[in-house]
Length: 416
Image 1 (cartoon, rainbow, N blue to C red):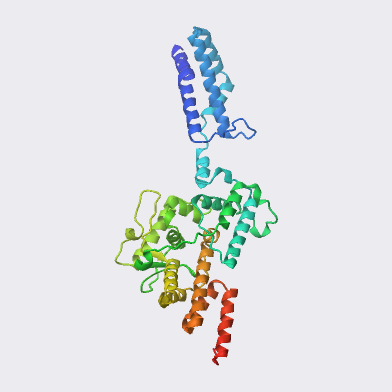
Image 2 (image 1 turned 90 degrees about the vertical axis):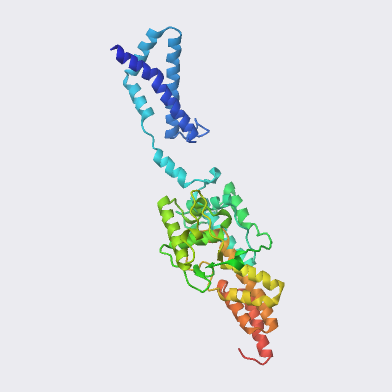
């Protein structure tokens, strides 16, 4: 009987309080306790926190009684309390395994999303409709949008998630100004791309090119096309080629997937991407194109370039000297369709990539067509007009140039 009492005293005054203290530290460290602990919204974690605090308070009172010399009465009080059924029920609640898995899963899915970004599905759908509408207007106004920062991309991804259950077409008049995150992302969408000239060495030293005007394809210098077994492998390669300054696994997964995917699934996609690149260039190994890292980084070999980089480089060269027209005409001849045709890359439409590519192609087509019309270069004019109208059918300036070319042909007595 004495052994039982000693064990009961030990567990009641030492083991149980230490366990409760450890649980309190764990709850606070994991960030599962809201700042407003005693607000109207009390979840299971906060209830567990309060129960552990109650256990610690009770143990401190009993310890205080023992220190004052009232050990016998204190021990009897402890035994009476412990023997009550309600005490065991409370202990069961305190020591019951909490649902860590669900909280970890939810936290992992929304990792990196600002806390202030919680918004209603209606507001999210309204913001999504406004962003897409603004992107179309930017194409018509030939205003290149600036690239979004990582924080803005995370907010954009959260807007997509929140608007999944609401049809964008069904959203009427919504007060978008009531959410600070939406206001910030709308301002970011309106931000114009700084006018700066960049020279990319990959434009002259490339081995593989990711062609974005049309359905994305990867080709080498002789025109061999890379084959990927998984559709996501091609999308991941496209995203990495366009986002070299943030080529990380977490950023790619946030942009490409609405929900979190398993690490093994992502690793399989990366492996297929490496295989497809290695098969098209036998002189390099898989790790040469995408080196294996044990961090969040997923770097892409700089010898993989996108066709918009080649077009930008050729356009800059053409602007310096019109005699360098061969490269820009060749770049325009490779325009097959609107950017990312036949895909569902929502990230490209929302972050402004599609808009920037369309404006680049239209700008190059207008400049080349205007020069070719004056120089009498019919072949270059036809290539420029075809490329421009493929990415933007019905573009007014291109159609005006086409009408001017027709009138010039009739004035010269020629028939096209």
